[in-house]
Image 1 (tube, one colour):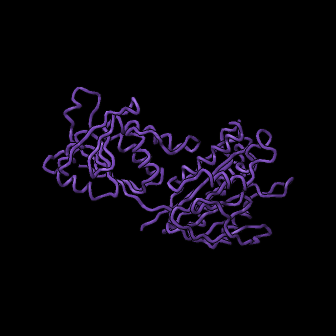
Image 2 (tube, helix red, strand yellow):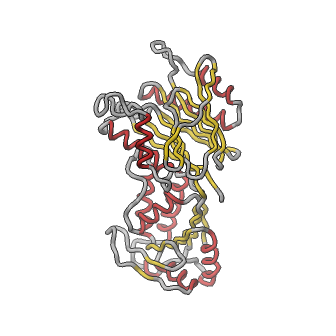
Image 3 (cartoon, rainbow, N blue to C red):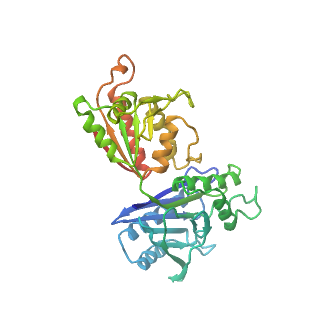
Length: 386
């Protein structure tokens, strides 16, 4: 069973501020992912600059295997100290972890991280370290399949102060909320948006502090192969379809002509649904042995628009899709479930599109734009053209 570490985060700005005072930085190097969430004191430009410097410096040092204590000393010595409060101008959480879940977590003055395991929230064991007179906490990580580790800025525990809650959203209450709402099938991005959205609701859509939630999750790899159009050379159909069928654990066919070719190769019937779940998206089809069959260009165009919204760091809408139209079903599969996505893009000109404002260039641009957005989600994407 191949595992991989998925990550996702989202931020909401303090009301009236164009820049967020929190910053998330991540880097993959030598089999380890390093993720840093830094929270600059206050809000606005100054907080943004300080959190950006902190996250980038820490992420660079830790990912290059510099001794942990040396990394922390470098940052803590570098951070200016508030003369009035006597505390550093930026706090941080650092996750350094392999795809199999092994690694460590470092926390300095951010709210304590939360581990979700088998549907329940729990605390990590923490060891207190003293570095240049400051208390830093270290936790050894050994995450299992479907475990999710959540780090957050203090805007989360301050949510609701002065409007819906007297003393903010206590960490204990946050853990109870996550236990009730998080499901194993949810992605890291989905969990981050779920918690940030709840914080925003407690702030009554007027956050009194920058709020950022970052999540890493250990998941089983799922390869999805997508066939988009037949190859230019019709004599290659069988070879092309064979490569497509063996490439992924789940298989998607986009386009009527592609569906007919696959059905013929599998000696199965191509059946079409007559249910319109979305007026902008044509109905789906069914082929035994294929997980999803959709229409081509119109469905991909809607999917691209959904991907733009999905990758927006400030969008708090749910990241799972409950509608049953082809674009929503495909979005759930690619955005929420897949780890690796292999496109098979045939460049044959579809005779059915003659006289319509649809051409092969449009299809190629849709696939390329979609693949770029999937990469931003952390997916491994491979494009095959024929």
